Length: 196
Ligand SMILES: Cc1cc2nc3c(=O)[nH]c(=O)nc-3n(C[C@H](O)[C@H](O)[C@H](O)COP(=O)(O)O)c2cc1C
Image 1 (cartoon, protein in one colour):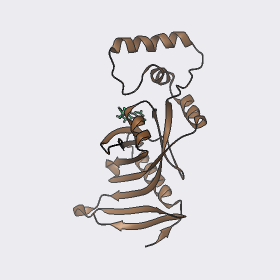
Image 2 (cartoon, rainbow, N blue to C red):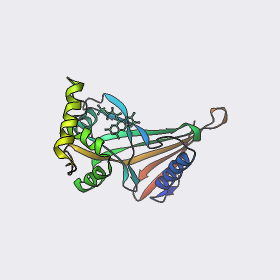
Image 3 (cartoon, helix red, strand yellow):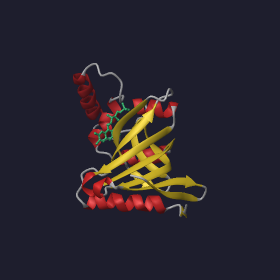
Image 4 (cartoon, rainbow, N blue to C red):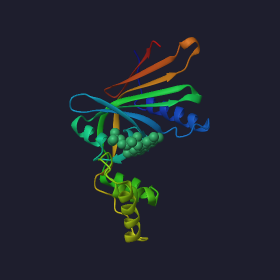
């Protein structure tokens, strides 16, 4: 089976992603993210892809959330994109590494002010006892900080899926879909075709 250049699956991902965007698909960056706890019990939810480069696929979240806890217990994840109008699916699997504080700071600063305030007053995935109190805390912090800087909560961070496998699926006639699987090998990727 051919070994491909290190950039091949990423370049293919980029082409598909930009084609999805050009096709007018909303939120092409939405990906279902699967994690598992220490016992291997799976959980899945959507997050937004914020970066995809040769190092991997990055999303941001509250490290105190369920996913954050699970990623500490079991630092592996899988993600899947589905672009219906393009008839395409991309699956990614790999180990997880946390982004640097500098990377998290840089992305934090690009977020709308309201979102930064929300992330500052919410402990994602913890029980909410009063929505009214949460909103009051959000308003209170808004008043308190005025136009000043909103510090990034230390637990708010990003994770990178460092892919060990990426599969590209294209819808085919009569369910004869086209599947190309890249598995990481030293210095490159092994490419195989997979039956539909
Ligand atoms: C389209 C979409 C995009 C989302 N993007 C994010 C995201 O980038 N980061 C995040 O923490 N939560 C995001 N969420 C919320 C998550 O799906 C989830 O509710 C939250 O992260 C808590 O998950 P957890 O309890 O499994 O940790 C998104 C939800 C949707 C529907």
